[in-house]
Length: 459
Image (cartoon, rainbow, N blue to C red; front, side, top):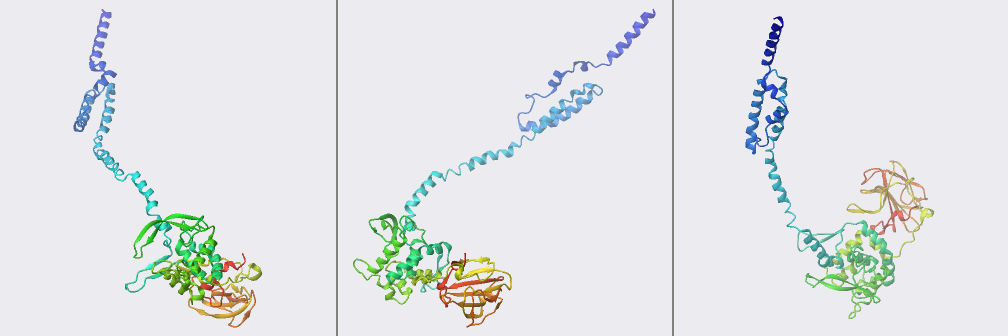
């Protein structure tokens, strides 16, 4: 009896325990959780459905989750991570702004099509054949330093302005002595020949003027059986240009081209041997007479003479019309006008103008020495030079010392080489203490008589 009561009590306890276990808990498993996850078929097919779907999903999930409050199988939470995965897909409508982007590239891609590169390269290939002959071997190329200013009054002549450039200075140094030598031998102005060579060859930049042709003056024909053919522009006499193939003389060097040109000016043309007689020194008073005579004869350019004159003045070419001065050489003859010289500006073109000498920078009051023994011919004040001293030397040179703080010598005084003649300053047109030092071939100190001081000072 007692045992039966025990079995009955045990059965009652078990039955009560079983009634507390929900049937759904026993059926939950991984497969069921996967089934509760929305499938692709259930997922929205259009952006409109996606926008409406997420709003229902979060509402259903919280309703189902609290329905089984105590059960650990709340592992149905994996369903929740699935929802956020769809949530980021909501922005996928973002392709809407991307839609126009694919449309733009096609618009940009066709842009290069209207301007095909092959056509451009074809044009470039054709350019040398048509456009280059005119400027390349037209015997009067444009000089970068030459500018023409149009006057307000049409009756006035156009002003010619020259801004010296280093390339032309280098060219002058290369051909200058040949021009001087042949000009003196043939009764011609070396200055005029150099100016013509600059103008005709664009300072030696034209192809015809360079090796192996060396034709500086554009003389046509052959020389000792040698010639070269180029396309060139000609003037019909009325200002109209036309292009032709022409043969030009070829020379072995620049000396040969100067000799042949001098022969042309001295012997003239076959039908008129005096055709260029007006360019000879013996038949003129100055180089201006020669340049004026060349206008209309050697060139149809009505301003040919004015351009030559402007070049002669800007580059001080008249020094090539006479014998080269015997200059002192090295330290045996000249010394630097300051101790421990530091060059701050060199001789030649500077900015838009011309620097007449060499500048040596040093502190205010630094002693200035006479570069050579000589006689003081000037000791005064000048608006540009400030306090300056000029000394004439026995070898024909004259030296000038400018921007001095104080001149220490007087006119007529004889000074020895190395004697202190002034102190360093910044008077006149000066931006700081320095010595402006000039060397001239004559006491006139004219620009065409100046030489580069560095050519006569110790190296």
